[in-house]
Amino acid sequence: MIDDPMDRIAAALERMAPAPLGAPDFDVASAFVWHTEPDRLEPVAKVSRVDLGLLVGIDRSRDTLLQNTVQFAAGLPANNALLWGARGMGKSSLVKAIHADVHATHKALRIVELQREDLPSVGRLLNLLRGASQRFILFCDDLSFGHDDAHYKSLKAVLDGGIEGRPENVVLYATSNRRHLMPRDMIENERGSAINPAEAVEEKVSLSDRFGLWLGFHACDQDQYLAMIRGYCDAHGVEIDDETLRAEAIEWQATRGSRSGRVAWQYFVDLAGRKGVSLS
Image (tube, rainbow, N blue to C red; front, side):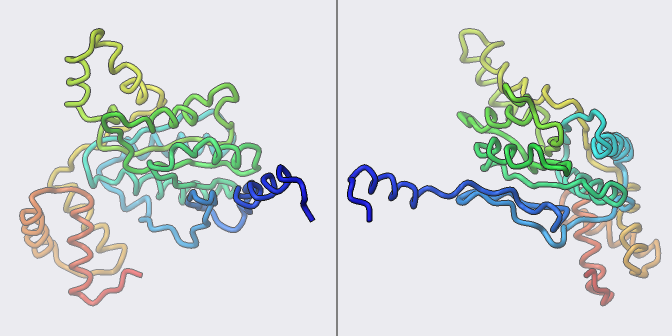
């Protein structure tokens, strides 16, 4: 029985505070998602991804990121990577596909998805990963920052590592539609209103400079768009002649007002459904 009021307070605080998160079993899966409140790493039984060979029109980015990932998985020096550019051109698909491809020969490679809003907790996540025998791709999808958004400061813990340094077994791959991770009009506004325009945005703009690899993704042309769809058809056994595919795919793109890998996949899903082909 606890009689001392201070002991009772201490006991109550101990009950309220979450217990320190123990090291998870990283052998149960090759992919995890980081959650907070409470902190935990949830294993992903089946990752939503496409085969690396089906990603068309991004050969240079694919080869560069693949080589970087192979180096990292083998315990060699590797860079953090920022995949930036046009929407729907396979940035996140490439990260997941490369992880699967490299994991086939380097079984210790893991991927951990971190949501942008959970960046303030990244220090706690790194403490869990630091010292583990596995190697981790920390994946942050659709990364960007708005006005007065201080989350970017937490990201520096991954890129620079602070006094401890970034864990040797962790590398960060992030995707963004913005090269500098912040809107252009925000950069211009801060430059125009600051006493020292250069210093006003230096801290935020320089964040992207901390990525060793910048991989640009640009809108595809019509031939690449059609090649993507043909690749999906061949991979999933959907039969359609080239003339019909071309006519339907171009009409589909016109109704969407854009042409990208995402639009190509959406057309293919519609086509497979009409042909009675399951994609599971």
